[in-house]
Image (cartoon, rainbow, N blue to C red; front, side, top):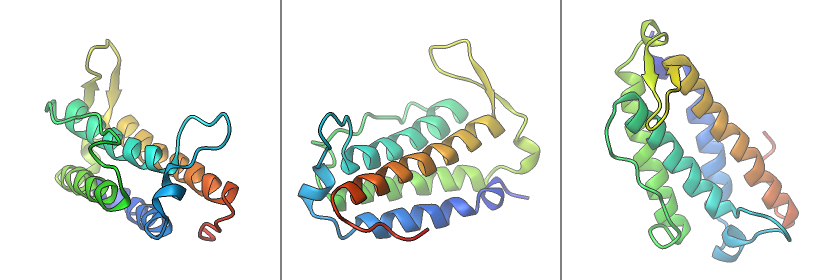
Length: 149
């Protein structure tokens, strides 16, 4: 079984999130509650860069990670383009691996921490799901109904 098959729900979770944020205005994407640290746009950029970091830098030891700033992806179209490009890359990596690879070990850059592919894949999947919940909460705080998932 391919790793991409094991994590096939990731595609559904991503699609639900993208469909929810696509119609938002720039003001809605950039809004932060009083005392809030991140906007919806910030969280979307973070999701995109995190999955690239884990699968590119950690698993494949490539130096393809970049900190995705608001200047680099200022609007929903550019954010979703980055999100799609990075997720396609991750999906290709996951499609090239099987569940037999789950116990493979990878060293986190600039750290002594060693993680299994299973740990990294589940963390990355859960990371997106958790931030999707934050995005939906930020939508609710603005009076925008998120999808009923």
